Image (tube, rainbow, N blue to C red):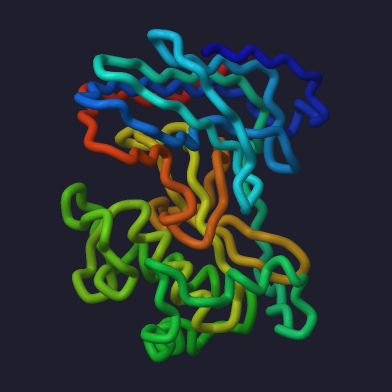
Length: 276
C-alpha cells in the first residue's frame, strides 16, 4: 500500500532546514507474519511534513493507528515470500536544538501530569539503581538543565560507541557497567540518570542528518522548566536536523519494527539529505 501526503508548512523556513529522509527494508518471511512498523514521522511542533511516500511491495493491506504515546504505527500481515518496506519523506525541521543553561528544575508537584510516567522505572531504564552515579556526575552543577547537560556530556566522554557491544536486552545498568554501547544504550543511560534526579526523561527515535554511519537513530529528551529539551550523548555538541518518528519510556515502546513470527532482514538502507 502507498500513501502520498502534501501539506502547507507552518514554519518560518528561514529558521528551518528541509530534509529528505529515505528508509528501505527488505525482508523474507517463511510463514504468515503480523508486524507493526514505526517508520513514518508526523507533523507537529518539532517538524512539518510536506510530502510522504510509504510503500509495501508487493502490495498488502496496511492499517494505521496511533499508539498510547501518540506515535503513528502501521500494521501489516506479511505472507510467505519477499517484501520491501520503503519510506521517502520530505519535511522541515530545525537546524539546531534549543539549549537552556541555568534553566531550573521543575518541582515534582508542578510537573504536568502527562510527564509523570517518565519519572518511573521502565523495562530498560532503571533509575533506582543509578542514583549515586547520577549524584556523582552532577554534584558540581546547578539543578535543572545544567545537571541534564552534565549527564549527557559524561556519557559522551566516558563511554565507547561500539556496534555489537550490546543486545536488544541490554539495560541501562549493564551499559553503565560495561562502559560501551550504541545509541539506544546511551539514550537509556541518559534517561535513567535523569530520572534518578527526578527529571522526567523519555526516549526519542528517528533519523538524524549527517549521522555517521547513517542508520536509524535514538536519543532522549528531558523535561525542564516548562518543556522538553533534546539530548544526544552520541554527539559532541547539540545538533539539529532531526526527524522524529516516536516517543516512549524506552526502546520497548518505540521499536522501529515488531514481528510476531520469525523473519529475515535481507537488506537495510537509511539516508537523510538536505534539499532546497
